[in-house]
Image 1 (cartoon, rainbow, N blue to C red):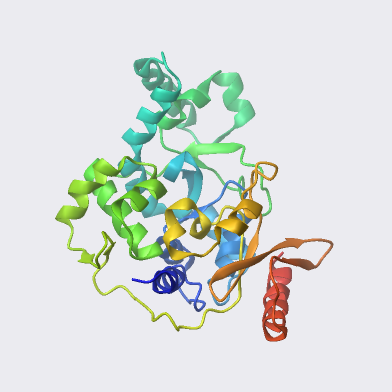
Image 2 (cartoon, rainbow, N blue to C red):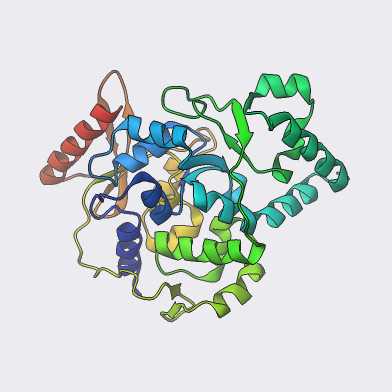
Length: 327
């Protein structure tokens, strides 16, 4: 497949070729979740791919726990559907714990397990703030990877962006194998044809763990190591791609998706910079990053990286107004 064909496959599955009428949980499942260290990110991203999205819809979904936020892929915060959280966590749990023990040499895993049990008991009656946990169980954060936790609403919402209220994640009965299979399906369903190493890079799991999994799944082979879900959409290279706005740290721009050419290496150095750790919100023109945007004093300011045609400027103005209303 050409880079442009891969680009269109990714955009279609990320709901960036046309906005969808999916519910928020189903949209999150389609996207493979949204990386969400900064609470507004999920709101901005959903506004770019759902037809009638309004901010309070996501806040309500978080309040109803049909959607949750917690540490998942690459040990970063993601917003996902409640069913996906349990399966993702089952597939990621051992890799995340092994990573933590490698980085923190000399740590006693047994001690962290005991601390996690105490943390579970502390949260049994409901969510607690970080300050409350600090007082009741000093050092509790070291056990966070040994117990599935979520940001508890209203923490981590548009209205209260600081993530300082924690609760127990929904219970899920799933094996590691179940979780790894689910990660493969969600990645291919959300990002298009990929190689095993790209799925592993997105998940934060060693590629060798996925090898036996993909061999057992009924996947479509597209050559050059590319795998895909059967009957998943593959739009032609000439499929039009509308202007779209992306939040910071959008997964379509991260290293695992490089094959789709959504961001050039020249622009990558501008968007992901050591002086701007959260990265920069961007806009897409013809399926590729063409500039940055920011919200400043009740208006969306565009900062193009390249020359923009008059027609495209009109499209950007319409999309910027849509984003301004959301913000």
